[in-house]
Image (cartoon, rainbow, N blue to C red; front, side):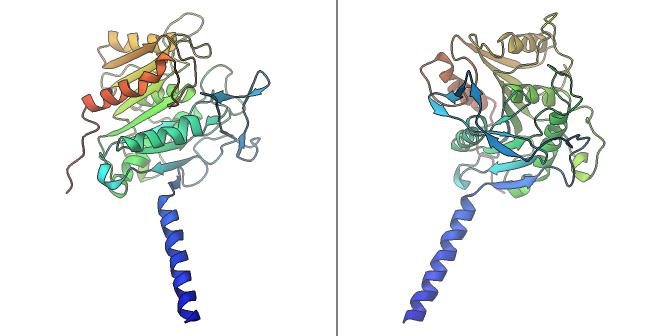
Amino acid sequence: MKRIILIASLFLGLLANSLIAADQPLVIDLWPGKPADDNADTIGEEKFIQLMVNGKPYEVAGKPTRWKTNVTKPTLTVYRPAQDKNTGTAMLICPGGGYHNLGWDVEGEEIAEWLNSLGMTGIILKYRCPRRPGDEKGVPPIGPVKDAQRAVSLVRSKVKDWGIDPQRIGMIGFSAGGHLVGATATNFEKRTYEPIDSVDEISCRPDFGIPVYSGYFKFKEVGGLSPTVKLPANAPPLLFVHASDDAISDVEHSVTFYLALKRAGIHADLHVYASGGHGFGVRPTSAACSAWTTACTDWLRNRGLLKTTPKE
């Protein structure tokens, strides 16, 4: 009898462990070896840090945040929605952090959870940071764009495994991550690194993009559009989100890029809110910007991206 109880206990333990494991997101390496053209010899060990602002821990909506830095091994962390809610749409998530750190929870994990609630696959792109030796100060580094281009192609190579429609792969990014979305969405005609395998033969053009309180789109000195983004005729549709009172990344970054796209006849939408500041993610506040998730959901629905794809 004791032996039966022991075996049953072991079985239940293994079953519980398997269920826990099934709930864990899938994490895969972005590159088969060292990231393309990376110069990370002086970068320390990857770690989480406590971001401080004016001597106090940085919080969003009154809650603490977690930041990751020293990324030398970029990865994709895949959060899949419930199978019965899966729309077949996926979004690469690019956390912000000035290309120095990554806002892992507020602009990563919490975004994936929100996307899952809409029936979308959320995939956090852990791109290389901080800036590397030789990167020009005040200018977006090129390394993260290489990671993002590779990420779009890699996701597209996994569509059958992950239940994704290959024509419904978008990107959403915040602050510097928003710039990364804009750069990736408009620099797809030529890869920024030499192809290394069959993954790089697959298109790196995202099907849509959502840059949220982005920076680096406007030249500070002359006010023109940054050369880090382009205006190709077949650029995917973009939805810009920003708050007018953003003291870290001026709203004119989004406005400048939006107007350039509009003048070029490229589809773009712009939502500017009177209040909200910077770094709000999807955490609810009393500020006007809290309405952005509803507007974004409507935009996705109107583009047919929240419709469930037919099962084969």
